[in-house]
Length: 229
Image (cartoon, rainbow, N blue to C red; front, side):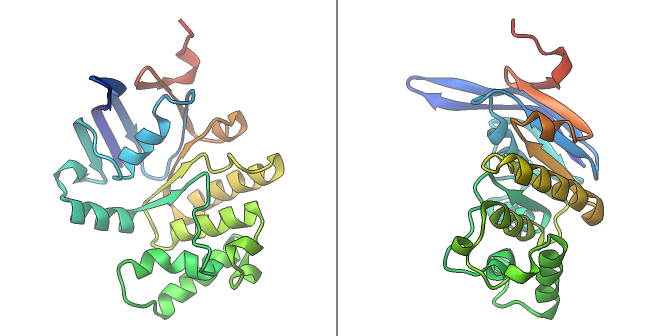
């Protein structure tokens, strides 16, 4: 489903550049659960931004479900991203002036002037399946951290994405809620039949993935073979 081939990216740094990704390659199959680990500053979020089409690499090839992402213009990339990819961040990024259900429906409103019966039923289903149906009319400030993250998960799923990207989804939660959110994401992977990719520092989260890769020196490798040399 996802094929990254020799992805390279460097950021300007004074008179030179700092290399972040150095010929990185990755293959992910449909429906897999993949965890990306690595030290702070290694480029994990940058990699997720490239996979999520939020950032273009300097060079390399990116194929998503048969689509050559590099060939899409900005408008086509935006439409592709909205329809095919769901994002979950460490911070929930809910809009405070909207209720939980309204926040969930926002990705639909980005493409349509109003929501219909089918979209509302989809939002209600997601609220129910994530255990927060009774909170649909609550505002973010009225919700706990775990509840806000569940709303964010529902928002990421409203368009039925093929790929769900989670950047440190449990980073701001206590151990109990982190465990619940991780198990919820795995359950969603099965029920929604979507590919799940998680960036995480938490070993307990990474261990639940089918595959774990470690971002090291700008490339991905199996964690077991990484050394500190």
